[in-house]
Image (cartoon, rainbow, N blue to C red; front, side):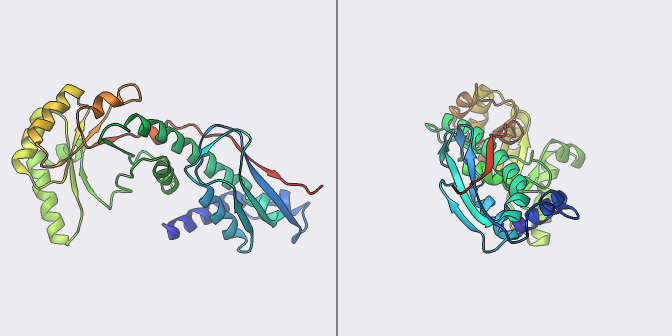
Length: 282
């Protein structure tokens, strides 16, 4: 993760700075020192403190970062998340990237925690999806983890997931499963296989073939999930997906399904208000 994070920070700063932070360069002396605090202006779950530390240290390795709160902690309006002691140019140049990351991450962590709290009395776990912002997936998925969710596959490379289009293009469930298994063996890969089922009939076909690790029950109603789970009989992991909201998530969890996946915890999250303010000496 660290190499990916450094690459993300580097490209994000380059996008923002271009040929120079001219606002800062025009009025701040190169080695002038300063302090700033991160003010919390919304209630929720704090996320991105460690990311902020990495950003400041990427720009100035001897910057002094003093956290007041940790990732995953509840936050209230008026609290201070951290204090930074560094060159003023460093503080001003990093300000917007730090805020963009933390505000977005805190919004995702807060919404994720809301979903996770609904599942607290059930065995069902909450998964995220690949419905993420391009080039920002690393931090969005980290925010899900901070909020108490579980990261599903990170990309197309760390799991074989045979969805509806794969199955239709390939020529059916049996052919897709058998070809995926052959591919894994031929290339000596250690990848799990998940396959999407769109009906009870699909579940029955999957059970006839086997050779998979998890069955996604896509757009099933809770009653249909109960029927599917009876057919699966604990032989494979199960995941419910599609049409699941905060209002009905407990009804789905009550079926006994192993996982519920939700793209909404990322793409419907609202960024929370945070502000980096200069700490002036009296």
